[in-house]
Figure 1 (spheres, rainbow, N blue to C red):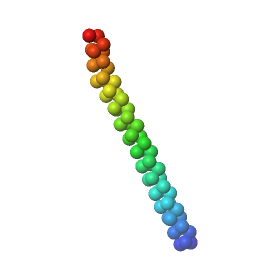
Figure 2 (cartoon, helix red, strand yellow):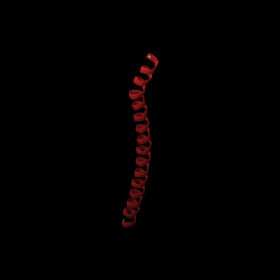
Figure 3 (cartoon, one colour):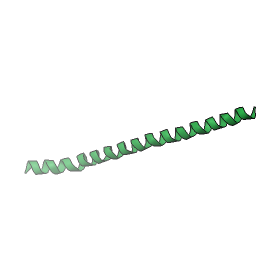
Figure 4 (cartoon, rainbow, N blue to C red):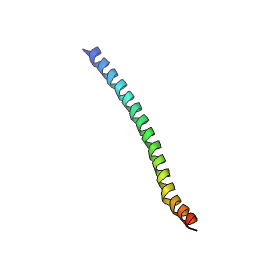
Length: 57
C-alpha cells in the first residue's frame, strides 16, 4: 500500500511540474503578445495624428 501512495505522489509531482512548465510557456507567449499589441496601439495612437498633420500640410 505504501508503494502505491509513493507512486501516486511521484505521479502527482510529475503532473504538477509539467503543469507549471505548460502554464509558464503559455504566460510567456501571452506576455509577448500583450507587448506586441501595446506597441501597435501606441504606434497607432501617437503615429496617426503626426502622419495626418504632415499630410494636411
